[in-house]
Length: 196
Image (cartoon, rainbow, N blue to C red; front, side, top):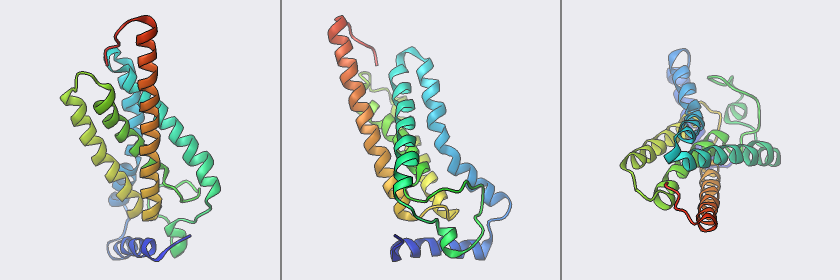
C-alpha cells in the first residue's frame, strides 16, 4: 500500500533522523506534540462543564469517541499497513504502541476536534464569539502540528495523516449536523431557545 510519494516524504524525515538524531529532548518534544490530540478531549470536558458551551463540549467528546471507534477499532483493522519505521527497518523514535499505520488516529481525532470547534462556531453558535474563533485557529495549528509530528517520528505516512484528517472532518461535520437537528427539535418541542 506504500506509494513512492509517501516513501519520499518518509525518507526526508528518515534522513533528518540520521543527520540530527531523534534522541533525547527532540524526540520527547515531538512525542508531546503528537499527544496534543488529547487537548480536544480535555477541551470537550471543560466546555461540557460550562452551561453556555455545553453543546460544544458534548460535540467534541462525541466526535472524539466516534472518531476513535471508526478509526482504531474498524479502519485500522481493515487496512493492514506497516509504519514507515518498519518499512525502513529502524527503531521507532519516541513512544510507540504497535498497531497498523492507516489511517492516523492522532490526525483523525485532532481534525475532528478542530472541525468540531469550527463547525460549532459557524453553524451552532448564535453569538459568534471571537474567543471560539481563536480556539478554532489554535485548534487547526495544533492539528497541523500533530500531523507533522506523526510523520517526523516515522509513525505515519503522509497519506495516513491526510486520510485521518479527512475522516475526522467528516465525523465532526456529521456530529455537528446531528447536534443542530437535536437542538432544533428540543427548541421546537419545548418552545424554548437554547443559548449556544
